Image 1 (tube, rainbow, N blue to C red):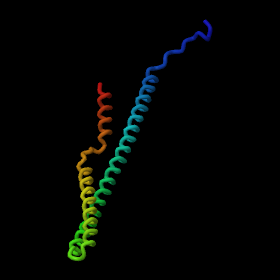
Image 2 (cartoon, helix red, strand yellow; image 1 turned 180 degrees about the vertical axis):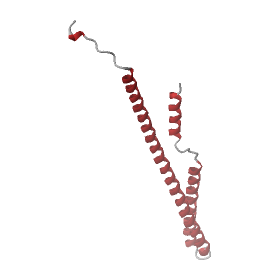
Image 3 (cartoon, rainbow, N blue to C red; image 1 turned 90 degrees about the vertical axis):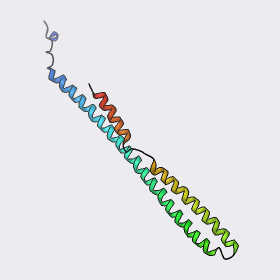
Image 4 (tube, rainbow, N blue to C red; image 1 turned 60 degrees about the vertical axis):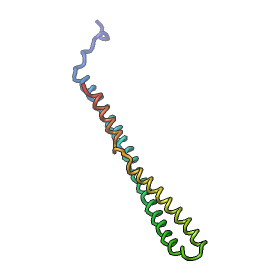
Length: 133
């Protein structure tokens, strides 16, 4: 027999086990990385929602305060000339209406039941189901 025809001994099973373990570890790390990215996206979305809620609440407070101020001036000036009272009545109605709308929007946003990190928990549950024997 020639030297070219020699067969190499089969590799020990530990090499294939080690390669399989490395592949599994790599896949696991990639899965964890993707889940952390999803967690970051959800955290950003919730933070934006909280900021939006606070902005509507501040708008409601400011506009309602302006409306009440104009209402107080309206009641004071109501006994004076009629044109001033009409202008103040219009401004009072506008500010109170805008304040009430902003308050309703802020209240509706606060009542929205969004669980934090819901998509992440769903994905992790799906991963756990796939890994079950």
